[in-house]
Image (tube, rainbow, N blue to C red):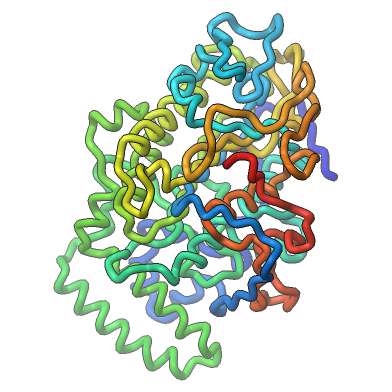
Length: 473
């Protein structure tokens, strides 16, 4: 178990990433300009994506508990690691700022002053407080959270993002009018895991949310010249693909081209990524808030996206954690306004996939990579890395207004796990919970990985090592 405890390093958010954003193992990020780059490169553009084969699933029956209460997932990663005892596992002491205004909601102690908007949504939130991190290295743990397994294991090195698994599983349900990728990522910066060894079709479509939407959904020369050039590209590439020594891998890349082209000159797709100034202000007028607006639009549009990842950093508060306007207050204010507005809008909008509301159809998960030291502050007036942390859930069949598990009086350790497995929860359990909510068999093994070992959605879940937190539902 790794331990990276460095109180003298206040800038951990900018530590060197574990691996490059585009790599043959973790897969490419399908950015808004990537399509033009690939189209312009012709068949050689294939090498911007990994050499992949279609996945073949062999689900192991009888071992999985599938809730199937959600159709979408919005996964909010909080890189930098928020202080659990100042937020979702509040422990009040002499160190607690008066403006936190600790308030009890249905027996849940919460920093009403720090997170006032979310305080009004406590009836929708369920908090897992018995979560423990396996390591204290930012880059390692941020990847671990996104893939639901150790990045240092053999299959961890080629593992896809949980969102890529969701995109693969839901692809078979795609309707003809659903032109958006199954996995969209927003505000993610440099710590986004891609599609791993999966087909490039399941890579995250990574964009920065902005009021005017995506500029590259049209070609500056016009639609007809674009269509003509694309047809010429297809005519050239088809023959080259057929004769390529790489075989079917190159042919499969056609799906990547077609998916990208399907988004061009599509008014429905264009509208998803645009929003008005008044909405921008209501959501906080920042990158995280903008991303929450687009996440809402994606869920509402139902154009093929079922997994959305949003990142909000700034939680690496080794020093001056209670100093305004920075410290904990900066990211907490953005998180509070953006997520609070998102919950309100989803709960007020009728569902489009069988749920009463969009919130009923969408499970939301928010978590960091680990927690922060407990009790009095450090000499630098901050908090360092710590194993204990939390995951907050809402929507998609989650029963709100409750807490799963408890910690001791300082928040240092798990006192009561609070769920069926009677142990602290782990990243793998959170992954299994997301899959279960979406009706995906988390014990599934794919027999197409380059090592020939068999890729399990959640490693060893079929043997009972990891389990969804069913008590959330």
